[in-house]
Image 1: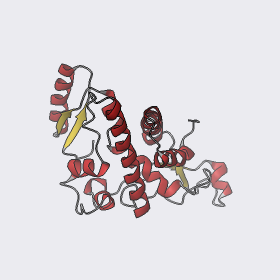
Image 2: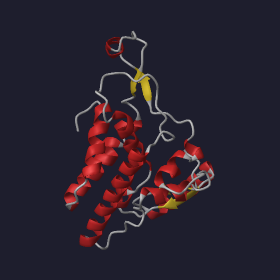
Image 3: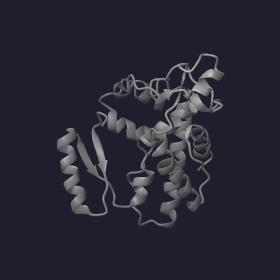
Amino acid sequence: VAPVHYLWQMSRYESLCSLSCTTRSVCYVSTCLAMSRDMLAFSLHNSLRPIQLTNTTQHYTDWDGITPFTSAPPFYEGVDDFTAHTLDQVSQEVLAIKAALLEHHPHLNLDAVRHVREWIMDAYDHHIVDTSSLRSCIVTNKAYVGLKHPMVPAPAAAADSSGGGASAGLVPNTSHRFWVEDLPCGMVATRGIAELAGVDTPTIDAVIMVSHKAYPLRL
């Protein structure tokens, strides 16, 4: 668990949520907050899912899905202006989904759905050196130092095609939770909610398509 100020906890049953929050707060020495029992709030909550998947656009947009990388790129410290702008647009689209849902269903409690920069600053403010922009909040976050893109050695066929032999290069680790959890159960689910709410999500669509290059199943 990252060194954040607080953790989010959600349960359909309020008493169980309170008990779990207390337990997590003790185990992780971090405040655990009970989230709305509305599953939509949990699904749309802007935490690490959009950050992790959007970061893939920087390195995988032009990737052919086969050619190995020479090394694992820095995951958070390497975020550039393009990636930060993409992340901002993803977050804005999530907020547009929130607004559309509340317009038709004002009884929903979606207070937990916020812009990703606001979430990062709340969760990591004691680790962030420069809070002047979304990008600076990520690249100067001491909790993110040293983290790399999840990679595995390239298969022999791909490595041979690069001219370096079976041990040459790395490819994305397609069994990592960024793809097997955050993509199909996070970003794609958000895209589905957006469609039901009648909200266009061109940036989310683009991130899904790029991330899909490293995902073994067709979505």
